[in-house]
Amino acid sequence: MGKSDIHLVTDGDEIEQQFRAVMRRLAGGVSIITAGRDDDITGMTVTSLTSLSASPPRVLVSVNRQASSFAPIERHRVFGVNILGSDQQELASRFSNGRLKGAQRYEGVAWTAGLSGVPLLGNSLATVECQVEEIIERYSHGIIVGSILSFELSPQLSGLVYWNGQYIEIKHDYDLDLLAEISIPLAHVR
Image (cartoon, rainbow, N blue to C red; front, side, top):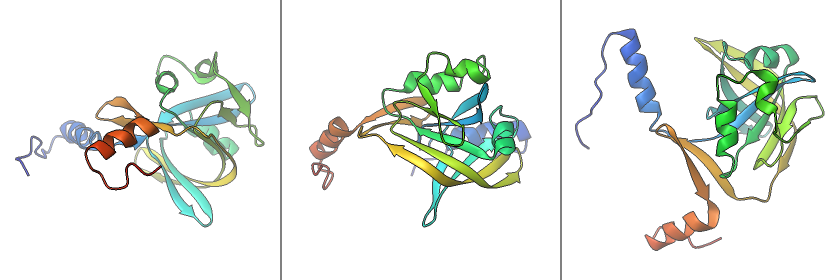
């Protein structure tokens, strides 16, 4: 392994910047967390979503407590998870745009209200409606544990990943063919 370009320093801001550089090396699936009800809706793009348990079905998402989505999630105790496909990069950018607030992020976007009233975005790879089971507040963020109320799964098999500061499209057939070409075992099996 080569010599590291980053060395830990004691200045707080410098450590934060270095930590962000390190975490950008971790690829993450892109989702939009939706929150609120009726006219009071908002949402945000995240890569901090993960499964906690399959039995019982639970997810975790980490949300900055200063983010506009945190208060409605805390207040209504429900949120939506919208896992984005490779063709939804523009939507990911829209929901991470700091100039757009609340319902502005939904303008021109297909969505429906889930059973709990939380918005769920159309054309996602999967949508999951969650009840807040617990919020664990640590430092600047709330770690939200969600129990599954409902879900919908698309037959589409291409995803969107965020890595090193940019969106990367993962297209099922094309990327499996590339892996098979470089002799990754079983990549040709579909």
